[in-house]
Structure formats: C-alpha cells, structure tokens
Length: 140
Image (cartoon, rainbow, N blue to C red; front, side, top):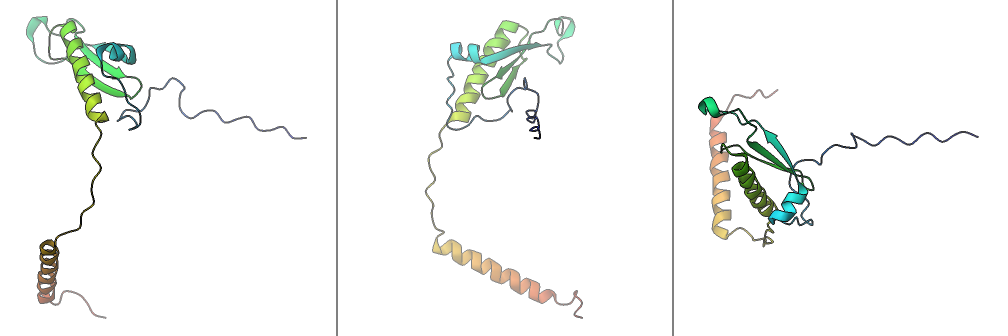
C-alpha cells in the first residue's frame, strides 16, 4: 500500500487582506457610520507635505481599509486627526455607494442608415487614397 500524498498548502499567506477593487455586484455593503466603523480598519499615518514647524509632528493622516471589499481611502488634508477620520469615513461611504450603484441595463440599438452610409463612404475614400499611392511594395 502506498500512502496518499499530503494535501497542497493553500496559495498565499492565510492572513493576507482581500484584494483591492470593487466588491462583487451581488454583495451590498452598508454605508452607515456604525457599520463602517465595524467593517473598517483604521491606520494612522504621518501626513506629508508643507506646513511649517507644527506639521509632521503627530500621526494625523488617516487610512481606512474596508475589510470586506478591500477598498482603501486616505485623508491627510487637516491638521486634526479627528477631522481627518471624519473625512475618511465620508469618503469611504461615498466610494462604496459609487461602487455599488446599479447600472441600468443597456438596450441594444442598431446603427442608423445615415451612420452606415457615412461609414461605408469613409471606407470607400480610404480605399481610393490607398489605391493612388501605388508602388512601394515588391511584387515578386
């Protein structure tokens, strides 16, 4: 009797965050503040840029990562961490709403007769232009 081979290890580290990008269309994520606070990971960063002697002394920049969807937003405009946190939650709600917006189904349409005529005429003119070029190619 031969022993069965051991099962293959799962691909990627087990604690890897979900891939960034839009969530699946069938998944609706709530965008109210309480739900976002539960579903988001808050990272504090040191804001970059000008600001004189009082800038870059505290970690006032805020990065929010929505764990279920992988969406990330940042807010570093204000000097106050609290204001940046509020701004980041607003941005996260707006971004999730935008990503979850349902597009109306497209109704397929046929091209009009005039547009077909214009397209054919353009092809005809291009063919004449190329025919007038003449030469250039070797006919062996």
